[in-house]
Length: 445
Ligand code: PA5
Image (cartoon, rainbow, N blue to C red; front, side):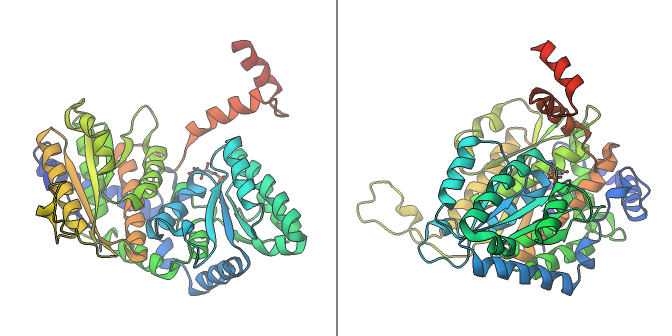
């Protein structure tokens, strides 16, 4: 089970003021439970872990198995909430060098539809040229340009290389039950498809087939992931006392820090495998809270790598930041520093120590240095990088995000701001239906 420690924020804000949020947090929890708050048509994620059925998981696992048996590579096509959750879990659990290994335990997992890079897509299609590959096309709206464009390329290539019949078997759609181009294509072509529930927004959808199918295809245990999330659903439940509820304490602490001028939260890890957990978290909090001209700016760093780049800024730059560190208690493997007779690098004082002991001291030393430098520091400790812990961590952040958004007074479940660039892009590309916008935007250039 994960734990949260806010002790090192308390020189900057008081415990009393954090605990003063108790009533507001209770109200936020009740609004979530009763569906009486803003964005209440998007609360399907709240009890998702405890309501996922064995049959649903079995269906996902069976489909994943078809892809695993018939594909050397599987491309996950999706963007934002339709991609980051899956990538966060897959990268956290995968061997860092898996895809360079000759003996593979399953298909190589690749990503597309999350950018519009011509070179990226060219290189991807080149790589896939001699591969038996499949595609999971993930889009709730079914109309997202980045994803639709990548899928158009991949569908054609898959059909050309593998034939229509096999393509039907290895292309799977995860989309809305009724609407959108992805749904129409899936139905017309006879693809296996999974539904993204109406009441679950993209960034809260990792525990729907959006995340679960790719994670299962990558060979990870989605039952354990869901079990970890379900345990956290309980631990963050509305009747758990404030002081014992990690989501409540996290939401209250970050809002109190924000009130005290700490406008940027930096999510820190000391394990490179957590990089995409931070990317997922940035979307979750950025899209949920950044509106009405307010909201903490979510940033992230990978330490100790970024101590050699961003470390200076964090130590001595503008004092508007605080850090939330995800600390992984136990490593999966064991590696000790060898002794060296010549000791030219002077590292013999570390001989016999586990690499993780060095990492943990870097973590502790950094925490103390940053606190001394005026940066409040919270710590989230997870026991290990495994499915249970990750399931718990993801749900913890989701629940805290719902509470935190309500404390801030915004609707944490919409994202009106993401439409502005799309409107301009369509106008610039002369999309049919955008004639007026095209004229107006051309006049500005
Ligand atoms: O959180 C969100 O709603 C967004 O990030 C979406 O997930 C993202 O824009 C992709 O949308 P869609 O799933 O409709 O393709």
